[in-house]
Amino acid sequence: MSLFASSVPGKWITSTIAGDTYYVRKLRAMSEVLTETRVRESLQGIQDPELRRTFGELGMIKQVTVKSPQSVEVQIELPTPAYPQRERLVEAVRQALAGQLPPDGQVDVTFTVKVKGKDSGGALGLRVKNVIAVGSGKGGVGKSTVAASIAFGLHTLGAKVGLMDADVYGPSIPHMLGAKGQPAVVEEMGGSGQPIRRIQPIECRGLKVMSMGFFVPPEEAVVWRGPMLHGAITQFLRDTDWGELDYLIIDMPPGTGDVSLTLSQLLGLAGAVVVCTPQQVALLDAVKALNMFRKVKIPVLGMVENMSGEIFGRGGVAKKAAELGVPFLGEIPIEPGLRIHGDEGRFAEIFSENNPSRPHLLHIAEQTAMQIARELLSEPKLPSLEVL
Image (cartoon, rainbow, N blue to C red; front, top):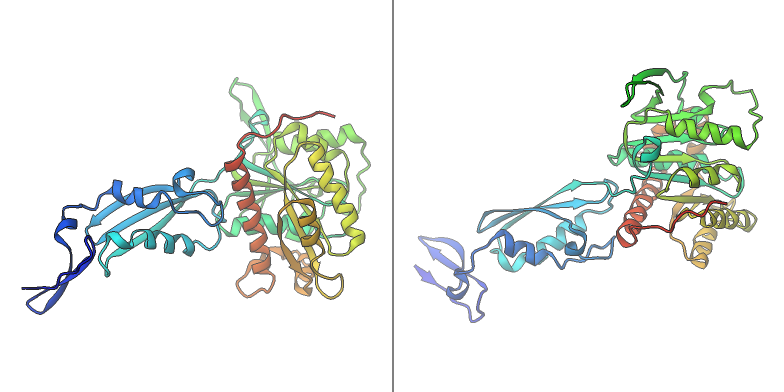
């Protein structure tokens, strides 16, 4: 056997036996057995590129398995299935373990998901980890398009999602999704032995959907005062059989009216997304919506720019978000196919692989989910509710 030593203690050196080359540690390092503890210690200090904290602080190292001196498997727990660009974590883990394995050693990185959430709907019987409101300061900016996009985007990325259309005066979600029928009512036995009536949401491509549009004809106007509106929203939340969800997206009515106050009193929302088009006249109203959410103690997750392009301009919302100190979640370029799919009730098809809008919509869904995770991990407790 010929042994080619190195002058650097603890490094891997080559050993040739019968013509075959092997990698071995120098004598001082050979007593250092590769263990789960040593691997974990090496990974604790990795900085997560999205959450901006270390693996150790976040508790992201789910499991470590040392298969042999040349092979290690690391399981990372993510706070949402919408975590983007996971390959960055794979590379970071491999770099952190490079000094403990031979050059031809193998590091397998797998992922599990445990969705972080406020779990704030227990008082209403909801089993939903995160409730997200999607609002705007005015109508016509594509709020329902963004709400449906976030819902289908998170569903596409592997989350369990519901979509509630709270715009009772102009429900457009059923038409956009091509969802039809009237929700059935099923009687169940409650914990006290009393029968409870539960509304079954309409299923659309794996998405659970509830809207006033399922109960009234499209041409019929809903003329309600505040108390009736409050009752309908409460019933949609409390009496609908949503099941267990990672995210419930609520498409809000435009403006700064009763629904936001109702939701703030019923739930501790994970946050709100404010939708706007790039031009200044629309941004004026978007700022009002943002301040309204803040006033009722609903965290603002960020702003979305819809219809970006030559017609309305580009970049206005990103600039305004920076001025206001809120995240910019992304832009949706104005694209005829987006309107056509919505008009024809085929919105889910936008998430097919070859659709040009797909990457923009998935990016917004990812950023929305990651912003929730950042806020929950940095500030688990939100201010107490101020009832107006």
